[in-house]
Length: 294
Length: 293
Figure (tube, each protein chain N blue to C red):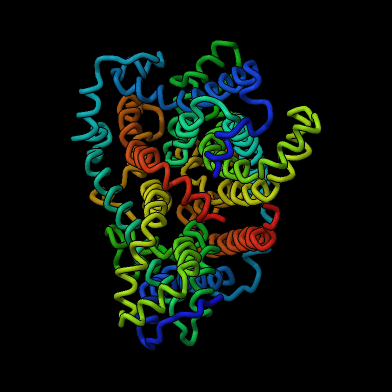
């Protein structure tokens, strides 16, 4: 829609017709892009220098010669001075957490939305509201009692403890339900006439139709899962389940004897997976984000 | 709302709902109920005796000058983050909506900070503003300014606000861009034919038509500043110096985790729950009325 509109002429009646205004637009947008990119450029360049350069406060803006040394050090050993966990271990833990949260949320949300949209049964609206109301209970407002429950279940320092309490999703359920309500009745009737039951219909019709929504949710939920900080901070005390977000903040320490060049290399590694997914799956992400929230 | 064509199985829908409901009850409703219950309980220092104290935890909380400061911090922080993140995003969106070359490229280059974790955003801002190793921090010191956000509370607030706003611009940008693109061309053309200047057109035509998006983002940004910025504060300032950057969520964490004050921490959780409920209700009232476009 937007494409069609913009291909005709200038939306605000001034662009295209006014080269000076266009130039100004480009200049401001480039400045905006640089404003966003500057901190990333600093860590990217800093991560290729040695401890002395960063420690002196030189803030190098050009690449140095220590990239291989720094990255291999953090990847295999982490922050040695703090008896740190290798970044590879923390990245693995974060990947497990992010992927299982993503698939878990999508899986349980798509089936519960299917139940609410395609069946009539006693308690349907009650259950729907029970799921809906969790929107008002983000993990941040119920951290300690939730920690207590996880601890009573013996799940502290386990992947299950990290993941399961976060995989209920009102947002995903609402999105799928909304989408399911747009599937034409004729399709359901046709399937029933062909003798397809609800499980067949789900597998052969509903799942394939939901591919775009699922891709969009994948991006949003992966970013959510990878970037979790408060919950892993509470529920993991052992290094073998430490995630990258918790680990990198620990690396900062008291900022007196921080090995800044290693923090920089770890920062680059920690932000790479979610940023890559957002950029590579941009088309689905943009569509999904705007539709999920509305 | 229910569709007409449905399946008639009796047991299946319950089985399909079961995983979501079990998790919701065990990890959402049960803990939320416990927080509510403990907010009315006082435990002695050794955790031996418990006493039902009605609203004493709440009255103590709201009588505490420190909590007043934390509320004030949260208001300043949220207002500044929301204003900064939304105005920059609106500016970029208006420009990126113009018919210019390379607009898709700009969009890509402006949305990626969405994927940066709050804790990572904080670390990026350490490398900008640290008095000894930060690019801008050192420049400020070289210019003769007594810059050290680890000692100066106002400077600390300034840096956490910038880091939090920086991360949120891309989200707002996407929604403003979608809002702008949904404004009918005919409206814009009519305004242009009337000869209004671009700025005048923006103020009288475009901005009012964007009001549903603006309102929606207002709620989302306040929610973000309240709840999703824990990692930024923890990595950058740990709430300090003093209590200068403690927000409501950070204080609840400190009282529960560090001070082990279950009653007060639970009361604070309940306050936060009420805040998030109010925000969610406002947001959904808006959805009912979003007939503007």
